[in-house]
Amino acid sequence: MNVVVCTKQIPDPAAPYQLDAETHFLERPTDQILDDTDRYGVEMGLQVAEQTDGSVTLVSMGPAGTLQGIRQALAMGAAKAIVIEDPALRGADSWTTAQVLAAAIKREEFDLVIAGTESTDGSAGVLPQQLAELLGVPSLTFAKHLEQEDGTIRIQRQTGYGYDVVESPTPVLVTVTSGVVEPRYPTFKGIMEAKKKSIDVIGLGDLGVSPTLTQRIVEVRSAPERVSGEVIEDDGQAYQRIVQALEQAKVI
Image (cartoon, rainbow, N blue to C red; front, side, top):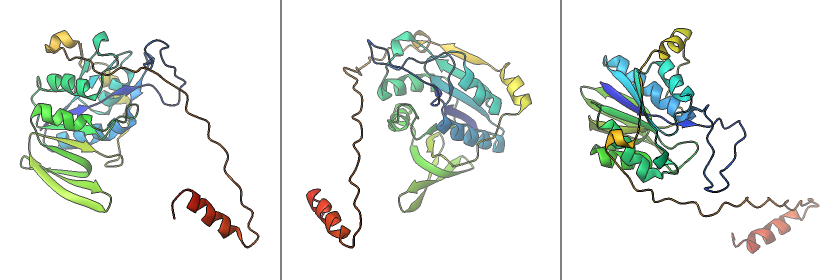
């Protein structure tokens, strides 16, 4: 089974960052890491590929930089990577990103597309469904468990009350939740082999698409500082002040 995993390189959340003073876009460093949520998708893709004698292809959009994050996923076991980098895509919204990723994925023979539920830096949570629509395949979301058998993908879709069992024939797109599997650590051999694996860095011209950017950041303001709360000393009647506060907040 040929598996495509959508991956994203993001700045290290533990490192300091700043916004461009003119565009308000995040200034992305050349060294970026693999989005932690995508590690689960890569691992799930590798497990499916290993069960079916298939392979995993990574597809990513964004500044390539040193490709540190992509090589992390290749070191885990993915076969190759496609990275779409183009200055015209700076500040792209989810819909634009979905169009670009769909164009890249359509060039590959795929049975299964795997994505995280949302990226750590964007947290929009809508791109996978947009991507499935553009690819013309079903979308199985919030998978906490995945099985494949005879060209059918079956998942346990996480809900607030447990899970639903949902299945679909391939090709299909699946979003996986954090904790769905335990991502493997790259071995030394895997790290060395990743240096030799194919990473195809392409632009919009190579895909033949020219999406129109519709997102613009007009202003960025600092969040207001949190004010200290009220400390109530209990002398046996503190509940009255709590009731009063709840009434003022129109909770009761």
